[in-house]
Image (cartoon, rainbow, N blue to C red; front, top):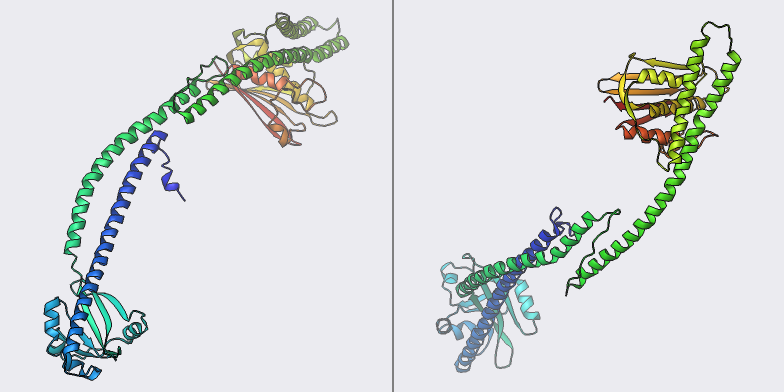
Length: 489
């Protein structure tokens, strides 16, 4: 209902200023309209009172005529009684005078127009009925003539000595509004001068008041903008005399106290949470390579053949694979023992294709496929963390495929595209349910019966630290595709 007054898009200071100006303008217009209406009402009252006075004077004059007439006071003698007096009445009182019989037919008039046109003037039945039913036996009608002037017509009965009605007196009165119009014009001119002065004063006070009101709010707003959880925030000083603003300042100061208390509790909780998460991550990262390392050793033990001419090369490959995983566990264990976070980045230029192949050596699954569109993709990355990304994603893909499933597929695809490289890990496993997709990168999320559920969260953190992104697509019952996109630096 008041949407027009909301002044959306303006600041609070502008809205206060414009509201006060609009209120002043609206009040001034309302006062002028009321004043003009009052002038018009007074003018109408004046004319009606003047007509009433004139009418009483004419009636007194008529009574004098009736007392001195030799004719009997009957309806039939009305013409005879006033024939020689009608113009005298009109001239003395300065008004038109008309006489009608009780049936509403014009008998006599001081207006020559009715005689020159030979017209028969008859009052309307509505006028006669209203006059007859009026308790005062007097009615007024207002009409507008051809010159657009208001004509007030008075109708009343003339009584004889027996107080019986024998004629109807009609006095048309023309309202002269020249004086009224002149007074209204003078008033509006004077009012306009006062209004301009009021508008100037209201503009000044509106500007000053809006500035005063919003000054404290601006200070509070500026303080709120720089309020932070990890620093000490200054309190505001109370303003004398501003109860409403002081209530807001008190609320802000209370918020600062609570914020500081909450910051301390949050810092303590974060420290405790960090230790817990560190312990879980270390356990997860150490446990991840143990199983494939054990399987690798067992496989080597079963397939070991001293007479194999390639035994030295195979031994070197197995050794390099095991040493790489041992180095990863050593780095994690060292970080934990030194009360630090996960191993810091040790960036180097490396061939991502070669590192990915080495990372896949720990897996014995024959259905794992590796595809790369280039033999050499050089990136600036931490080798240990890159191995961790590949092994975690491949391990998750293997575990997502049921053991009893036939035609198992796990594909590791590397694609170089301009200044970016994409690592895809595709499986045809069970897929991920829709309600679990939003939680996929949350710590502790897992669809497996084993593991801590931190692998994907750690991978996401590593990827984002290198300004990369990790996404996935999954269809229940058909498998999943994880994509790691990294910039080539």
